[in-house]
Length: 106
Image 1 (cartoon, rainbow, N blue to C red):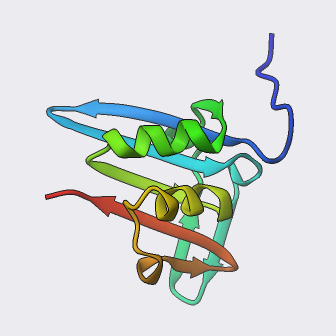
Image 2 (image 1 turned 135 degrees about the vertical axis):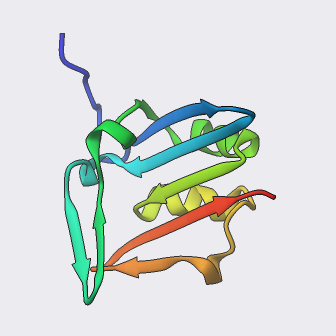
Image 3 (image 1 turned 90 degrees about the horizontal axis):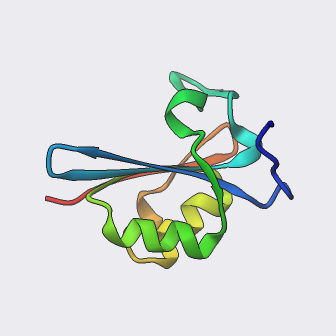
């Protein structure tokens, strides 16, 4: 049975455990599979990397609190990063109108 997304407001959330790192990938569901370009910047929202489970903002914020690395794409996903304190709003880049942020804890 195919995965059901109940609304465009959902976010795809996927976590990876690599060595002792926890990588969280989150993107707004409607961006999966799309590519955004602006000048020399190209952002491909790879389905294999980003398409995990549909999640709400609370679940994304909870996952980000545990993350040591994060890759966030889209208004809702990046807002979760900012709201949870793991992303500085001044470090968000916009590519073709789409917010993108990455976080790494040292």
